Image (tube, rainbow, N blue to C red; front, side, top):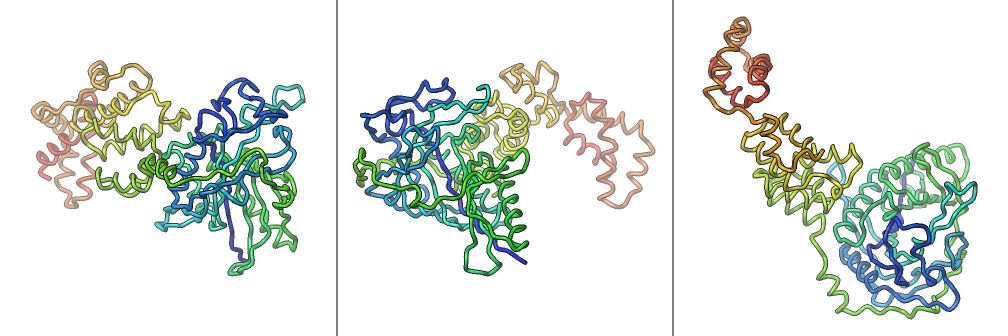
Length: 483
């Protein structure tokens, strides 16, 4: 039997405010357990929450970026459920009157399609604390540093039909919130967490199947794997005549396994009721305009500018514009590198490869855009060859020097472009290879001749100790061989 896959996402975006949503406690990551939890965060009797204005501003900025309706009147509610790291036994969130209403995000897919994913709404809420299960001698510790950290929960419509579309949307959302500066996007620290709702229905049917929710996916790779795993699990159940149970599941990416966490509750199970300690928040046009004035260049606009300003192709412009920090690094490299396309190749190639190999972010890279730009300029003006440039890059990355010219000089990597010296080397090598010269000159097929030139390049590079300009060598060879 053939099936249609239906996917919707719920995304918890941790807002980059300095303090929590209802208290003045710090939101800085990495502090000792329970050192950043105030009496308000602990829900002590007699304490009253005070809304964080910056959290509202960030939420409105997000809404404007996804062309959403802004809730002029947003109301906070209590969502009741028990969990050890939820001190109040309820979460302050928004139910019927969220800060952000319907909007949309357009996603460019690998096959050239543009997929529109509708945003149902996004609401403000407080995060829970964190249960610690390691190094506690068989017990569980509770760290409430994260309790009260402001979130917006973005809820999509069930518009996605494959893992590719879901991951594409997730990447686009990550690009949006980091470009806006409202979230650092560090998924390893829980700044962005994805819940994936999945159901199957007979192909062409209008009736949705029973959905499951896979919670707290914190990498794009795990999201893709979790979707594939859950689709296969549901398909096996349905094709064996069984029924899918509506439930919340957890996925282990290292083992490619999932398990049931709890039977999925309905909204009435949470016994929502208006928060008695917080008045409705009314957003006026002046506040919305102040948020609009703060909007930076968004990824789609940046991509279009990169294509126009730097002459980049659609693929490279898309990769470079998706991450605001990588985009800024590229622009700094291009500014000093003389050749924007060459700068793009090095940022997406060597630079990104070293970042991935050492699991670093752009901001953690030991090389600056200025330094890489100086190196790109030396490649562009033929001071150093591509192979030599990789040695220079490695030296800069490892901190051996902070200047490309200094590395080129100290390691003797300056490329020989003196045509007189290169011609002498070509004459000497051709004199030592008379049989190859004869074969080349007897060959009538230009494509085969071009391939045969490679046989001369090895000895030439050896003769020049790797410093001969390959392009000039090739031009001299063709001229002297009569090609």
